Each structure stands twice: as C-alpha cells, then as structure tokens.
Image 1 (cartoon, helix red, strand yellow):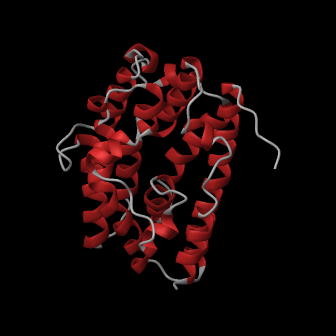
Image 2 (image 1 turned 45 degrees about the horizontal axis):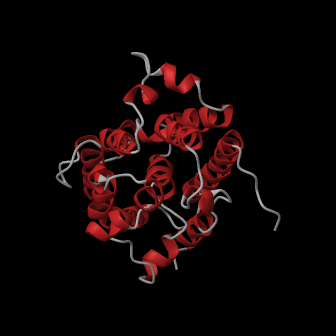
Length: 251
C-alpha cells in the first residue's frame, strides 16, 4: 500500500471518541442535544462549503482534483447533486425536526454570535480549520477536509469493501435521531443527501493521493496535518462532552 495512505488510515482508525455511544444511543436530554448540535453547526457544518472553496482555490490545474472538489463544494452549498438543498440548511431542518428553533443556531451578520458561545477548544479547532484549509501545500488542505473532516473511523473497512454505509430509506430509519429521539424521517434530508453522494466522495478523497508524493516533505506535511486534525478534534469533542455533562467510563 501507498505508505502515505497507510499513515492516513492509521490516523482515521483513531477517529473515534469515547462519547460516541452516548451520542448515538438513547438517554440524552434536550439541553445536551442542543449543546452537541450547536457546536457541530458552528464549528464546521455551517461553513464547510467555504472551507472547500478555500482549498479548491489553491489547487493547480489538475483537472481530476479540481472537478472532484468542485462537485463536492457544489453539493455542499446547493444540494443539487442529491436533489435536496444546501447541507447547512438541511442540518437546520433536521434540528427543527427535533423541535429546536432556528434561533438556537442564529448568529449576527458577521457569524460571531453563535461562535462566541463555543467552548474554547471548539473555537480553536474551528479557527485552525479555517486557517489550514487556505494554507500550503494544497495537498494538505485537501486531505484535511476530504479525508479527515469528511471521513470516519470506518475508512479502512469502507475502502476494503467490508463496511457498506446504509442508503435510501434504511439510512434514515436507522438513524439514532429517528430511532431514539423521534425526529420525523421527512426532516432527515441531510442523511439522505449524505447517503446519496458520500460513497463517491470517499473514493474521490483517496484517489486524490495519486497526486501526492508517497514520501518526502509534502507527504510528511499531509500526514502531520491530518494527525494534528485528529488531536484538535479529540480535544474539541472532549470539551463538548464535558459541557454536556458526560462522563468517560473507566476502561
């Protein structure tokens, strides 16, 4: 295997947080849910299309990479590839399905109001993503967004074909917000959109490594950037879990 790909997969193997069972199971109250989702929205969901645009703006004339990023950006900002709507808008519709108000996710004209309420680790992670997505080398910015941020702990299994994400109605009906918290399936357009397009996006994310040296200075920056992303993401998730009042169980 490409040694850089193996390093990135080793990072993704650890993209799992101890609070994940609580976030995907029953038992959270509305206050805890709101803390979690406000942070997800303000930290990266709302502005993810902008982050993709920053990375795309640096890519040299490599058509395959530019087209892949442009399609990803187009879907995130418009939802038209999946026949839905902008993904940040779909997120808010999902929140309304849970009974929250859009006012719970509102900010001032500069976008600062919502961000000001984030735990420090979330603001630091958010600011770092904004900075790094526009930083050189472009390969590190693209890998950070498309492999690390959009990817999951299932990357290795998905690439091997041993993990297949749910699609269509099954993806919605199995979602924890529907199963445990009564979110109406019709409010889960974001899940439907992800199920429709993310499989292709995952393949594109890893194929992009064909345009990155397997070793050397650029490969090192790509790997270390994603590893730093993991460190910052775990710190962010730890801080949000503390604010939610979740306690890590002893090993």
